[in-house]
Amino acid sequence: MLLLTALPLAAERAILSHQAVDTVSVIDVETAKTLATVPVAAAPVGVAYDPLRHRIYSTHPEKGLITVIDSETYEKIGEIKTGGQPFGIVVDDSGKRQVFVTDWERDALLVINAESMLVVDLLAVGSKPAGIALDSKARRLYIANRESDSVTVLDADTPDQYAEVKTGKAPYAVAVSEDGQQVFVAGIQDDTLTVIETEEYTVKTTLKVGDKPYGVTTSQDNKHLLVANQGSNDVWLFDQQSLKEIARIKVGEMPESVSVSADSEHAYVTNWFSNDVSVIDLQQRKETSRWPVAEAPRSLGNFIAD
Amino acid sequence: MKKLATVFVAGQIALTSLAFAHGPTPQKIDETVVISAPVDAVWNKVSDFSTIADWHPMVEKVEVPEEGTRILTLKDKGNITESLDDMNADAYSMSYRLYEEDIEVFPVSFYSVSIELSEGAEGTEMNWKGRFYRADTGNFPPEHYSDEAAVAAMTEFATTGMESLKTQLEGHK
Image 1 (spheres, one colour):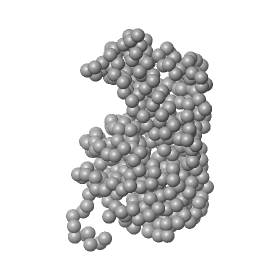
Image 2: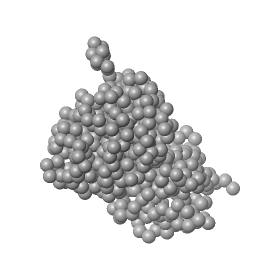
Image 3: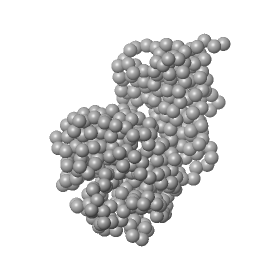
Image 4: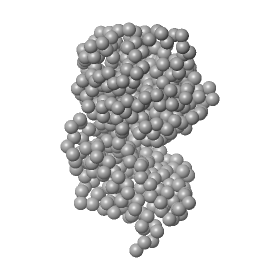
C-alpha cells in the first residue's frame, strides 16, 4: 500500500449502504463517479472504513452479520457472523484490533477482533442501541440507546462503564468532537440535540433542531456541527464552539446520515427517500450538488473514507 | 378551512411515552395520483384531519379525542390512531404518524406519512409518501407481518384513498 506515496493523493470516497437493493457502493467525491457496486447481504445499514486493514464493513441487522469488503479491490472478503441485529459500527483506528458494533436486538455492544473476525466480547448497554462514536485518543465509546433515551459511555479497552447520560427522546445518531470535549446526540422524537461535556459527562445544553434528526456529525477542525433532519429535509449547521445556528440547508428527501470530509470543507448527506447524496460546501453554507445514487442510501456512521 | 401557516402539534410530546416496536429496516412507498380539480379543492378535503372517512373507502369512521389526533376505524378491522405532525397550507403539505398501532388491524408497526399537493399541467398532483416498519420487527417475521405485507398495506391504503378522492372530486358517477 505504501507504494501509493508516489502518486497524487487520491480523492476521498463516499461509502454508501443501499438498504433496498442489498449493495454497498463507493463513490469518488471529486468526480461523483461510482467506483464500485458490491453485492452484499440483505438490507445493509451501518458502514465503516478500516484504514489499517484497507477494508469496508457494512452491518446487516436483518441477517445478523457484517460484510467485509476490500477497500482497494472492492472484492467481498467475507462475512462476520454476529447473530442479533448488528447496527452501528466504528473501527478502532488506534491500531488495536477492535471493531465496535451495536446490537439492536440484544441491547449490547459487540467487540470484534478485526484480525480473527470473531466476536470477542458482548457488553450490556441501553435498550435498542443504534449509533456509536469512538474517541480513540481518550479511549471512550459513546452509544445512543434509542429506546432508553440515553447515551452509554464505555471504556474502549476495558469493560468499564463511565456513565449513562439522559438525552432527548429516541436518540439515534451520536458524534464526538475531534477534540474529544463534546458529545452530540440527536433525539428523533423530540427534535433535540443533547450536548454532553466529557469531563463529568453532564448535559451542557439541549438545542432545538429540525424535524426527526437522524444524522449528526462534527467537522475535524472543531468548527462545525451538522444535524440532518429527516422530517424537514434539511441540514442545520451550527458553530461547534458557540453552539449557535449558522444556517439551514435544504437537501434531498428524508436525509439519514451526514459526514464531513477530512479537510472540513464539505459535508455529504445520504437522502434515503430520494435516492441521492447532497454535497454541502461548508464555506458557502449551501448544497452545491446532488448525486443520484442507488436505492435507499443509509450509511449510518462516518461514511467518508480516504 | 383556516389558512394557517405552519402548525406544529403538541401531541408529539405525549407520543414519546409509547414504546413503538421500531425495527432496523424502514420501508417506503411513493404514490402519486393526478386529480382534475383545483389544488385548493383537493387541499380542503385532504387537510381536514378529522374527515378522512368522507373520502377514504377503507375508513369507516373517525374520532378525534384531541386536536391533532384521530382514531381511524378501518372497515371490518378495528382501530388505529394517528397523530398530526405538521400542516402547512402554504406549501399544501401535511405529515402525520401512527400513534397507536394494532398489527391485527393494519400490519405495520410504525409509519410516518407526508401528503403533498402541487399544480401540474393535468390538474392537481397528489403525492403520498410513507416511511414505515413491518409489523414483526424481529428477523423471522411470518409472511403476514413481513416487509412485503407492510408495503402492500401501505400502498393499498394510499392508492385506494387517492383514487376515491379523485373519483369524488372529478364528479364521476
